[in-house]
Image (cartoon, rainbow, N blue to C red; front, top):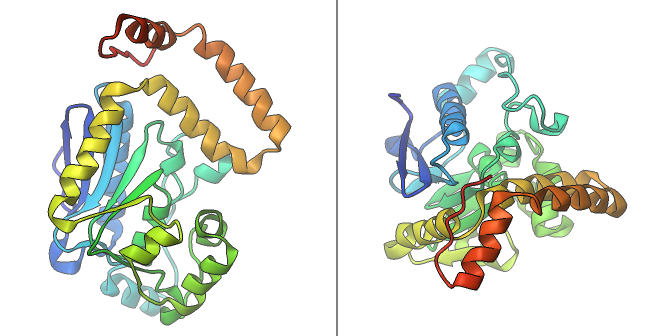
Length: 270
């Protein structure tokens, strides 16, 4: 499939989706939004893909909404287009909306945040499962400096990642946060040197793709994203049901076998 605003490639079980408008720091527009969803569908439906990496071309990850788009919204009185169909109609209603659909993708999504990450770009980064940053990365929520608000669930998600006070600071001030501070407050999981950033992220992605059960990853991702909506007892009941099915799976048999036989795993996802 040919894309205009993204790049899509698959290698060694890893699908890499690259936001590809480097001359605009990968600023977000409708074409990019639609193509990113298409790429996530390709990766979700491809049995060869075990892990997805989302990154940006050039110096930026995503600098937020393209200013031409924002100017158009001003001219149109703030009206927007229709939201797309749910990525997975069987997922929680929370994950059937326009932007928070990454939790409905049944494979881990790693955010490889290589540079400027602002506004809507930061929203999408927060919906990835694990976030890695280049030491050159700078974050900003941006919204308060555009007369906007905490969009697309950020007011729900950001406090769960960095805590209420840090979330309020980042949202109210829209100040710039460098990679070192992002790591300190838990906004990202790891920071790598810019020169080795891609290699470090891909090494982690390939490890997930080759050494752990894709079935386990899919189930654990669902459990993690559903748990904020559950009581402890509800989470335990669901986990017990998931465990019963896991014990009957081919991946469980392989997980025991490769450990006892001291050989690399050959998981099938079944």
